[in-house]
Image (cartoon, rainbow over all chains, first blue to last red):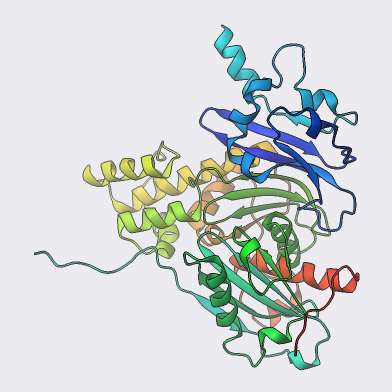
Length: 106
Length: 310
């Protein structure tokens, strides 16, 4: 399942996307996230899934744009820590941040 | 002092219904789903996976109370008691605060499952237009969620936005859809997506003497456009269905279909028996149906234990 956490507003798309079929629940992303926005636990959408899965904490979902901004996901060569830490490549970020920071640089 | 008009135009009618063809005493598994949303609360009781009763009420300021109201309203015309129910699942915004529920499941799963039951296994995209958010869901033939995207940060393009608009323009909320087509030409849409800004824009139009029906058309277009953005990100596949209160507003639905160039599925039961027996089709109960079905499945799989007291 593709889980999109975040929101879209007038300024762009602000989503952290998790491919739960790829996620093995190892929790490495949780350890490296400086904002502690991630959590591993039972899959709340797929009720019948047995294995734990990573998700964005409820309280972070509506402010993800600001929570994730310090890591500038998608900007420059380096990936955000959570994306880099994920061995199964289950996490990705929408291009909202990318556009924003590229815009600022110009 | 001027005469005060007390009519509240957003106030949609509450409904409940009981299936006369089912004797719950003969059923093995009685499960319930309670969907406490931001605007409306639905309770559904199913006997062995068949729809037995449902109720659709307004949510109050207190989630446990709203859940009880919904449940009591649903059971009003039956002799079934809450204690007779094997398993109850709470869903929606207030799902963690449903006193009679044994478990809470997110409304995303419940709407996918409910739409699968109501519209049939060919459903691939479900758009739930709720009271204060909208969710786009891609699902498989068993009603399992494959991909979802939610917008709950902003009330633009939601049921509450429509209620605010109804009150402002002083037209009952259920008349907005039909009347929005009663126009000579399609007006440009309201440009603000934000409910607060849209409200001032509408006031501007009213002041300028724009006909009411045209303003309704402009607002419905804006809402359809807003939903489009979410759907475009997810990708729409047929069969495409809409659940929730806005599904009943053809002014939005028809304009969305036009913009998407995809028709929404007809709002009828997939189950022929349900169609033949004229069981009312209420798009708002999809989440609660899904929850009740999950209860049934979990009990059958042995993943949950019956909490029946009587």
